[in-house]
Length: 212
Image 1: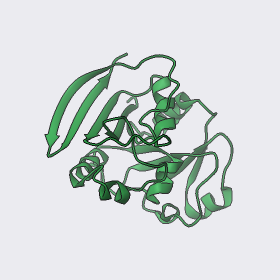
Image 2: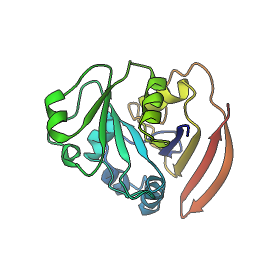
Image 3: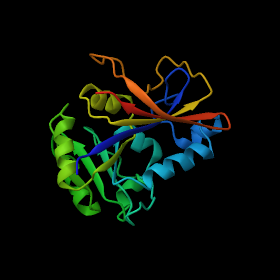
Image 4: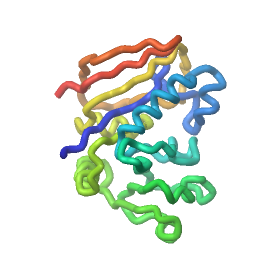
């Protein structure tokens, strides 16, 4: 089976994913960015996923991987892009019931990874296609892309996203340094076909297929 990448994100009306880079889900809910409907939506996606790709800042903000058993009875693997590593105090290191991977262009935090059961995949920088091959070899066919903006840009730039499931939240953030859904600098537009739209209270849940 080939790998299917589904980008799952909550965004504001102006395309932001938070007020600052290390913002937690608790902070977002405090100012009504997202709510329990969105949390349940994410849980539903995890129940049908083999793995999750995310950036280091997103993991630093949450501190840990979600523990959600999928339809195969295991927690999806969490694959974290990082070049600087993760703080030793994060709960992530102790989640031995979750398969965890650091993706970096060079070996990183080797002793801590060995002690914690965290794998380190060495993937050349700006080469997500190499990661796709690794995902295939591990039988991770249903993969969620949780971003943030730099990781999303990398995957869209290389044409590797198949679907996007976007929660549109009814607010404007407008911060100069607020993190974006996709960082600037794509060399060409990405087009989508709308598959479905669902309204739950004030949130709109959109599912798109990426046009090739």
